[in-house]
Length: 318
Image 1 (cartoon, rainbow, N blue to C red):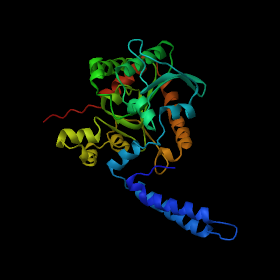
Image 2: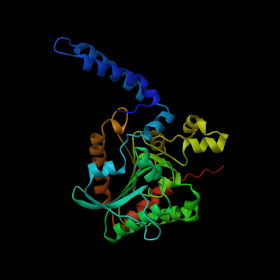
Image 3: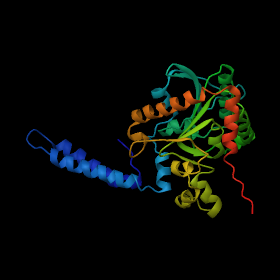
């Protein structure tokens, strides 16, 4: 059964009525006309609600428990998937999925955050928050991809890097910083997709790409709304207010012109409403950008990546 967010409750009520009418329909009692009326009403209500979402509501959609995760996209977009484990130093980090696959027959590298849907999975995946060993594993796999001249696809969906004491002791900041530096110099195409939450350095550590895409209902910011609210007002419950100030939606980020290259459309209500359709759409976008980037030389890819991040800075002089 679908999980509904607070602002989706009016839609849920209509859907429940439609389900009840279908259950009561028999050969002797036909509720077809009533069902059609409710379906049209539900469709109008959907358009009204999803066309007027606040930034906080979009953040909630980006975090929806039924939203497709990295492994879902791997299953629907790629073939011949082979996962790589461990950073050859400490341990494997299940919060970051890394490995090799093919997209339309083209060998490639795939890296992405992985959250869990039930309690056991969430604990195992650490709620999609990587430790330093996760970023070191990702870098190891990216360097392998460069060695074999394979394009790299990354999928970003994390509230941020894990802030635990052990993570800090093992060099969380250093691991993220090293990834930023090393990704900037990769001589193969790097295509990044923000599929859900893009939170702070935990996201950026696998997001230094030649092309950066965002799903329509994803968010991308330097900090989570709750974290921002805790710092500014000492009150994490003011997350909705912080979300408005952060301007973290795909449309907000796209208005900056230089941060992302495309917004990947989703069905009304979010990617979880039709994961198969969303994966097919995303695949088209990935292939389009891949074919464009394959025209670059290795040196050209490094220069293009360097220039796109340089262009994000604006200097104003009085």
